[in-house]
Amino acid sequence: MITFSIESFSSVYAELLPLFEEHYGEISTHKDHDIPLDPLVEVYRAREADGTLMMVIGREAGKIAAYFVCFIAPGLHYRSCLTCSPDIFYVDPARRAGIAGVRMFRFVEKELKRRGVQRWAVGSKVKHDASALFRFLDFEPVETIHEKWIGVPMTVERRKIKNMPSELDGYESGS
Image (cartoon, helix red, strand yellow):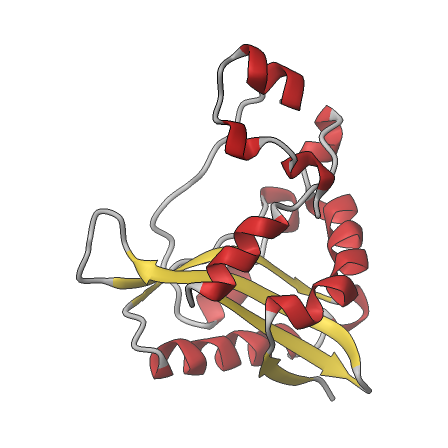
């Protein structure tokens, strides 16, 4: 059985990275445009430090089998509404037919309530639709997101040409 708990980014990132890569291969549209997985680790660490990053990790026999990563902060347009914004969630493919996803989302909801969150948004890729799970858990559809690829991958060199902030330099390394 999978056991869920809150874990820190710093303590679990190295263990999660291979799963992120597997998940990227499964669902990311970025790979179709030759954009590699390259997390802004510094940003995750900063969000962890300021208390806005929450990571729920599901383990079975000590091994990660599921995760839910999100950000908790007041809405940019609604200062008085503490909001949970999704980053990414994953359940091991071998465990998707059961109730692992339901159990993980219920754990997340309980923790969000404990933290005083008022609004929780979730989403899934069209090709990997989790709407049935969301409906089962009483989420209501409120928005549809579309994407359009209009340029080539951003490199450090292109940022410099475009006079983009130098604090972005070095993020390609994923360190």
